[in-house]
Amino acid sequence: MFKVDRDICIACEQCIKDCPVNDIYLKEGKAHIKNEACIKCGHCIAICPVKAVSTDDYDMSEVIEYKKEDFQIEPERLLNFIKFRRSVRRFKDKEVEKEKIEKIIEAGRFAPTSTNSQDVSYTVLQKELPKIKALTYEILNKKGQYILENMNDNIKHLERYANLWTKMYEAHKLDPKANDRLFLNAPLAIVISAKTPLDGGLASANMELMVDSLGLGTYFNGFFQVAAQDNEELLKLLNIPKEKQLISCLVIGYPNVSYKRTVPREKADITWS
Image 1 (tube, one colour):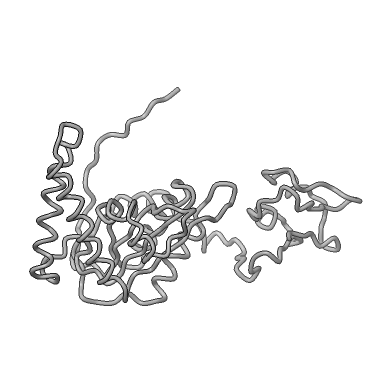
Image 2 (cartoon, one colour):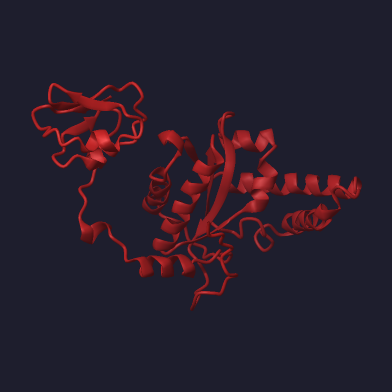
C-alpha cells in the first residue's frame, strides 16, 4: 500500500498532478492515496519534495535521491556509447561474475512496463547451458529436416536456414567446442520472458546497454528463439511460465575482440507530420 505521512506533507499537490491514474486527492488539507486504481508506479514517491510518500509493497531502501552528478549523462556521450555497441560473437574462456549478472538483471528490472505490470522474468543459464545448448541444436536440426523433406513454395524462403541448421547440428555433434555456432562457447546466457513483448523488449535493451558498460559483450540469439518458441521441453527447462512468452536470449561473456570505431548506418526512416 502507498501512503502519505500527514505530518510531513505540505499539500503541494505535485503527487496529485503527476498520478497517471488519478488515485490521489486532498483530504483535510493533505494528500491522500486511495489505493484503488493505484498501479504502484512510484511517481508519487519520486516527485514529493519532502519525502512524505512511502510504500510497504516495495523495499524503500532502494530509493535514491537525485543528484545531477550521479544521474545525468551528457547526450552526445550517451549517443556515442549506443553507436559504439557491437554484437559480440567472440568470447574469452572466462566466467562472468555474479555481481555483474545481477547488475544486468537490475537494468532490466527498472525498464518501463505497461501499467507498471513488471511482468518480465529472467532465466540465467550457466550450469545448465550445455544441456540447453545440445537440445537447441537437436530442435533446429529437426526443424531443418522437416522443412527440407516437405519443401514447397510456401516455405521455400526457409530452405537456406534449414540447410544451415542441419549442418550446424552435424558439425556440433562432431566437435561441440570447435563448432558452437549458436552460443559461441560463451559462459552465460540470459533468457527474457514476459506477458507483453514490448515489456520484455525494453528490458532486453536496458540489459544490453548494461552489458556493454560492464566491459562484457553480448548478442541476441535469434536461432535459439526459433527453437524454443513452440517447444514445450525446452520451455519447461527454462522455467518460463505458461502465461509468458520467450522474448529474447542474450548470450554474454567477456569479449575476445576489440573494436576501434563506430560503423555507418542507413539514414533513419522518418515521417514528419
